[in-house]
Amino acid sequence: MELHSKIYVAGHRGLVGSAIVHRLREQGYTNILTRTSQELDLRRQADVEQFFVAEQPEYIFDAAAKVGGIYANNTYRADFLYENLAIQNNVIYSAYRTGAKKLLFLGSSCIYPKFAPQPLREESLLTGLLEPTNEPYAIAKIAGIKLCEALYDQYGFRAISCMPTNLYGPNDNFDVQNSHVMPALIRKFLEAKEQGAASVTAWGTGTPFREFLHSHDAADAMIFLMQHYEGRDFVNIGTGKEISIKDLTELVAEIIGYQGRIDWDTSKPDGTPRKRMDVERLHALGWQHRIGLREGIESVVEWYNAQKLNKEQ
Ligand SMILES: NC(=O)c1ccc[n+]([C@@H]2O[C@H](COP(=O)([O-])OP(=O)(O)OC[C@H]3O[C@@H](n4cnc5c(N)ncnc54)[C@H](OP(=O)(O)O)[C@@H]3O)[C@@H](O)[C@H]2O)c1
Image (cartoon, rainbow, N blue to C red; front, side, top):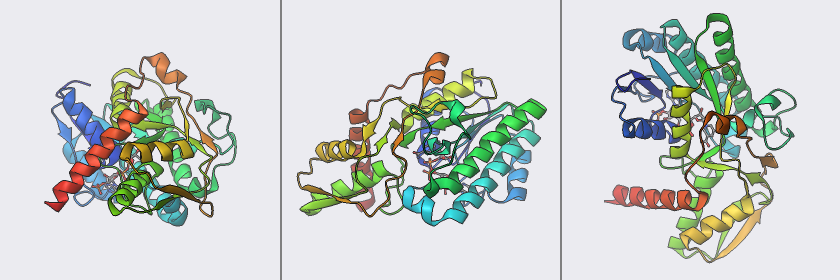
């Protein structure tokens, strides 16, 4: 990938897409192509084909998807399956058809079987049943990985896939109902502190363990793979370190300075008990994360407060 190569970042306003654009610019890439979903609805096959024919992007980061936390995944099951299949099929196949040089598809750690051995190794794919709450989303993602592998096998198209762990960072979705655990906690504690609330209710039992990676680190890893990785096998992206949801909740409360009580709503689902990535393959390729969890959360809290202030002004 040259500094002047035409690079299309699909989903550039999202958590991951915005981080990719941010890091590409920092590294001196100048020819970055973007479209919002209003400008180009990636579910519409003919429009996507037309866009690729007209623009001929050379490198594609496919960070556009219908994404959400446990509630959204479990409630909008048909939308998660259909929309993700449509978006990824259109982007990946159009990239191949228009002779793109390389594409990076983004999967997610939820593709692994619910009870796969920890840490999650790439070899565990399709070795067991999925977590039911996000099965439709995972099935779509698995189909995307398989499409990349098949295009690589059948046509030699350089479509590679990566499986990022749970990500957090600027431009995340902070909606209390539909967001992932990290932005949901940050928002809940900030609001509770502001309102002087006596308690905050967190979801589930707090016992599951999760791994978290800052989106800027994830973007670095993705650009690194685009630059240096060739092969049909997908690569996990993560830190290899995990924290319990209870400890994470207390850490977020401490960073924000919330001193009230934390209650647990155990009627809400916990999801998979553990989800730590094996990152040996990524480390062997020569990439390691740099942003620690505390430092990462502090920077997101700062970003969120600045955003809020901007909106109020
Ligand atoms: N967040 C995580 O923890 C995490 C972890 C592992 C993997 N990933 C993967 O990373 C990718 C991006 O996730 P994210 O967290 O960045 O999601 P996000 O913040 O919700 O952003 C998704 C982006 O997709 C675009 N999009 C959605 N539907 C579209 C459509 N019909 N047409 C065109 N664009 C559409 C949106 O564009 P507009 O803003 O223009 O509407 C948005 O910018 C996904 O593949 C996800 O599986 C995320």
